[in-house]
Image (cartoon, rainbow, N blue to C red; front, side, top):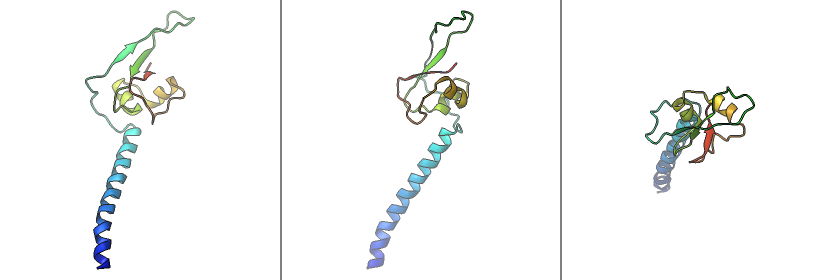
Amino acid sequence: MDRNRIARWAAPIAFLAAITIGALVVRAGLDQGKHHAQPPATTTVARTKKHHAHRHQAPAKTYTVVSGDTLAAIAVKTKTSVAKLEQLNPGIDPTALRVGEKIRVQ
């Protein structure tokens, strides 16, 4: 009877552990830029003008974060790299992007 009690609890616990590990592996892959999904229909890229002393410089481009975005996904959508996004947005936390947040992409 003790063996049945252990088996009854071990299977669901092993299943939940496997799902959790799988989710963490997938998330790690997405965070490293291995995900090449098509951009959602709600993608918006806006241009903003920055006042610089040098007037011949192109205006900066920004991207508005939508639900489900990661830096890797944004890099793919805007044809840049995660390293460039981090350089343009010092202090950005790639694991805590907020919907509606504007980040520089150029």
